[in-house]
Image 1 (cartoon, rainbow, N blue to C red):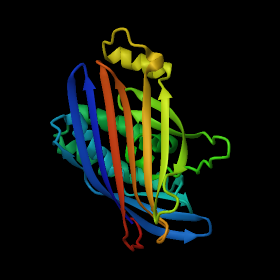
Image 2: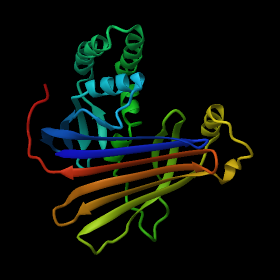
Image 3: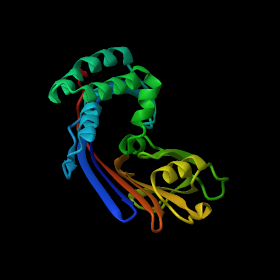
Length: 269
C-alpha cells in the first residue's frame, strides 16, 4: 500500500501569517500476515516542502525524521497501531545513518546537539512512538474510531492532537456514518473542545493577548474517512484542526491521506 500525504499548516499571530505545505508518500510493505495481526515495514519518501524552508533547524529536524525510516510495526486486523518491532536493531541503524546529517551541515556543534537530543528520545521506545503520533499523518493514519449509534450512549472517543510549540489537547467526540446507503460511505468524527489551562498558559507565554474570554475559545477537529463498501477498503482520510482566537492567534492544520493499492511483499533492510 502507498499513502499519498498532503499536510498544510497556517499560523497567524498578531496579523503575521506563516504557512507551510508538505507532500510525500508513505509505503507499507507487508512482512507478515498471521491470525489477528499484521506486520508492516514503513518507508517514507523525502518531504517536498512548499515553500522550501530557509530555517536550518527545520531542515535538520526534517532530515533526522526522515532517517527514522524504515520502521517495522504491528497492527491489528483493523489497522490500529499495536507496537513498534525490533527497536534495538532500528536504534543502532539510526545512530549510524544520522551521522551523515552532521557531515551534511559541516560538523556544526548546533547540529550535533540537535541530533543528540533526537537520539535521546529515540532510545526510549515509548517516547519515540509518542513523538511519532504528534505528527498529524501518523495520528490520522492509525485513527479508526468505533461508530456511535444514534440510540446508544456517547462512546466518548478521544484523539490527542498536537499543537506545535503549544502542546497536546485531548479531543473528545462522536463518530457517525453520514451516508450509510452509498457505496462510498463517509465516516465522520467531530470534536469541539475548550482549551485546558496548560494550553492557555503556553499560548499566553508566547503571544500578547488582551481581554480574552478563554471559556468561549474552542478548538474544532473534524475527520472524514471515505470507505469503499464494495471493495472493502479505505480510499482516503482527511483531518481539519482549527484553533482561532479572534484578533490574536489562529492555528489551522489540514492533513489528507489518499490510499493507493500496491501489491508488495518484501523485507525491510
